[in-house]
Image (cartoon, rainbow, N blue to C red; front, side):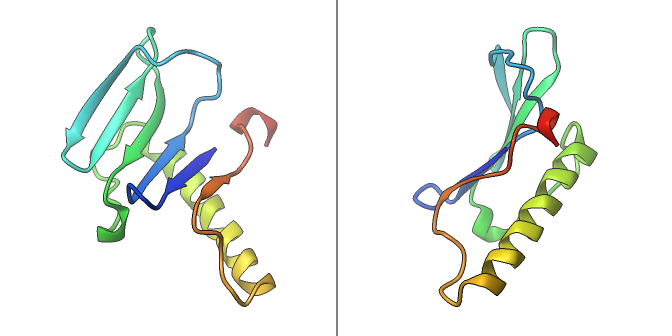
Length: 100
């Protein structure tokens, strides 16, 4: 699941829908944070100030994050084609990964 928050200009990419709680959050830098479960697995990556772009170098579970972002891109393209007013300004896109 991906959640975009325009007021914060942030994108939250959940790549682990195991139901595990966030045990810790660590910053990669001032624009990227990673949420970890107790067992050390990555739950999500939080991108800040996304209007400046999204940098994937150094992101753990990079391939899973890339897959989620590709899905987001496809959804937004479909929405653009279906609605001349464009995609929504905020909201969640996607289903838990285990359902895909």
